[in-house]
View 1 (cartoon, one colour):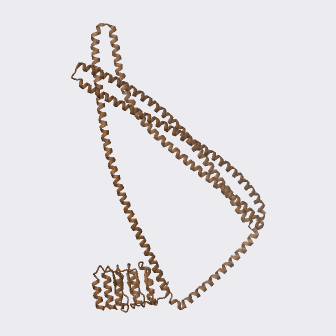
View 2 (cartoon, helix red, strand yellow; view 1 turned 45 degrees about the vertical axis):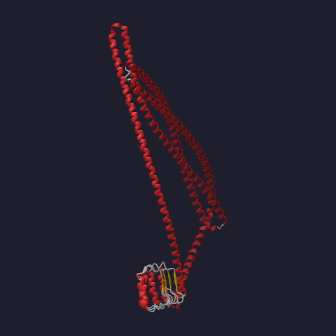
View 3 (tube, helix red, strand yellow; view 1 turned 90 degrees about the vertical axis):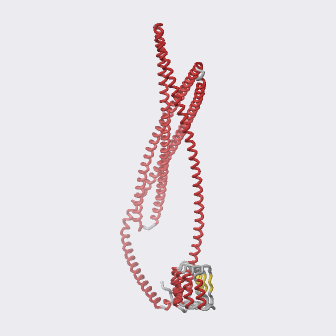
Length: 602
């Protein structure tokens, strides 16, 4: 029982309030001023979700109630509104309908025990398709017809289902967003782990590169020392040759025998030096050649592997083609059988039927026989062409396989010869290196006798030479192992190639046998088709005379059919006219009946 002034003061104070969620003003006899204050509250307040205005007097004041409805249209927080027993007329209901078309947050509206009536109910029903949030609307005690109440219930059910689906969609989107966030976190974690592993791999690669650089530097130093040793040996050889020349000059007076012996010794020494140089050059060339041959063998192996893969693909393609050809043959055979059965059934039916349909049946049979014969000829030509293509491809594949096998055998022989040569060269080089080391040790012993001060240096050089010899022996053993592995790989690959070739040959033989069986089946089918054609020709000759007799009867029957069709068309037109007359009469009766004023407009 608040007064209008107290209610307006209370509502003005609540305009700026942000805490109150539920407001109950039941039984306060609010009128025009109260309705305006409520409109101002709905415009300014953004926190009230439930407003109860039962047992007030807001409906008779149309302008104030219109302002209240305009504020309700722009409000975005109110979800429940109770307007029971407020004397709301059909005009107030129309204002509420306009507000509901623009409001997108109100979910429950109670208008029981007012004076909405038929017009107000229609206005509310017309606004509901444009409002998708309101799922509860009470209109009991308003003199609203039952069909409008049912329409309101249907609209509310539809909106309620839409609300439930929207809530489910929100829940699903929330769950999906959580899953996406979890996946993103996992991906970020995996990315960090991957970056750590990449950093570790980079560090390991840097370490290995440094180690390889150090090894390369050591090898370069060993090569430089070996070149210096070779130069020293060459200088000593030159000094020895000079000493020999001096001794030869001093010993010229000893006689022609000594001169000839010395000349032979010089020639032998020169030949040995030349042979030694040539052998070193040949060894270097052979090493480079072996490396090139190994690379070429690897490339050829890759090419052969590619060729084998291509051959496998071609074999698969041929298998697919053969499978398709088999399917086509089976389909054609089935079609021929079905058509033969159909032809026999049609012949039996034609014998039982009257002679009126003999002409049409004969024409259909002739067309089918022509179609079958054309189809058979086309399929036979296509199969012959496919068989020829498959035989040509088989021959080409066998030739390619023979060429590949011959190339592989020749390459294997060359590789074995090169391996044997490489082994011999390595042995010779080891012997030469051992001889050089022995000479070096002898020279070191002589130098130790000559100068005790250089003894330590000579010992160090001997130790270095022994270490290099061990390294060289280890390298030679590694090369031997590598060559043995390569030889084993080549043998395995040759075995695999031979197995593949045998398998392909077996498959081609099986395919040829199947094709021959299919060709025999086609020949049998051709014979059957020829027998059927002969039977059809005999039957066609028997029935031609009867067909000529029935042509006149068919013409008369066609004329009768044409007359019957004209009569049926006339009857249909009369029935259509009667139906249109009946429809017009029903529409006129409905338009003139008193129920039309109460039915909703469509």
